[in-house]
Amino acid sequence: MSLTREEAIHTSTILSEALPYIQKFTGSTLIVKFGGNAMTDEKLKRSFARDIVLMKLVGINPVVVHGGGPQIGALLEKLGIVSEFVDGMRVTDSKTMDVVEMVLGATVNKEIVTLINNAGGKAVGLTGKDGQLIMAKKMLVSKKTPGLEEPEIIDIGHVGEVDKINTQVIEMLTDSHFIPVIAPIGVDEQGASYNINADLVAGKLAEVLKAQKLILLTNVAGLQDAAGHILTGLGTAEVDALIADGTISGGMLPKIRCALEAVQNGVTSAHIIDGRVDHAMLLEIFTDQGVGTLITNEA
Image (cartoon, rainbow, N blue to C red; front, top):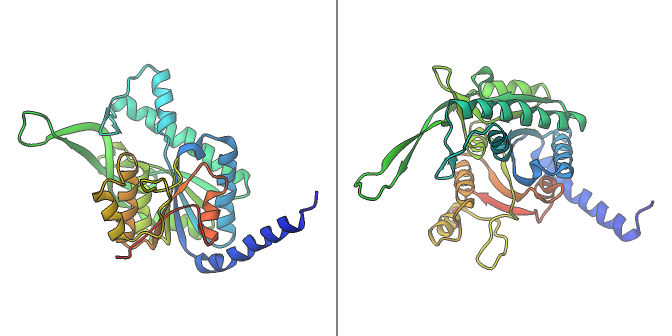
């Protein structure tokens, strides 16, 4: 079936609009945090894989970091292991860590690799333990407890934060035209494994790889004001003000802080986009308007 004249004009306009962005970003590195609905909807998963392959084909080096919280929760429930959360983070004992490694390092990671390879790409799956890619340290949570003057320090098990990243592993793959797909599991000097928040891993990777962009896929349309309008083109001072007045709160706060830290440490721009939109990444990167919230290190 042929396109109508109007459809043909619209398609050609979009393709022409993409050209300067392709020219600008060729040779650059983009870090993509893959999560939310985009990981569970079959159509969106295939769309995501095609977008990643297209980026690689036009000369961009995408690096994918994925989560898997719902998949971990489902398997823990099936195994009869009760999940406990402290400040939104899953308490991870040894049994839970075994499940985390199984789900993130095997099931989810290999599914994403297969999707990208089936779309014509060359993806390689990794965890942070491979080649000591992500060296981690234990995360301790401080919690204010009634009756105590000082905050209580809580050990939540095998939950970590990034200590350092071995960029050679990633650079070796991207230089050989492969697409790294990374599960956010780190390892410490003693060989202990740690579950790390995928947003934090993506942000740190963007910093050390001097990425052009950090892209965080979410289940919302982007950062919104009180009236529900999408906010974009934000500088660091504007973001700080939105945090201070409460516009940014709840589950969006960690993502915004991750994005803010990335741009303050050398990443050109961070994007929080709606993973429920088909081809959201291409629309954000290669069109004038985009589909999410753009944050840069401007005053």
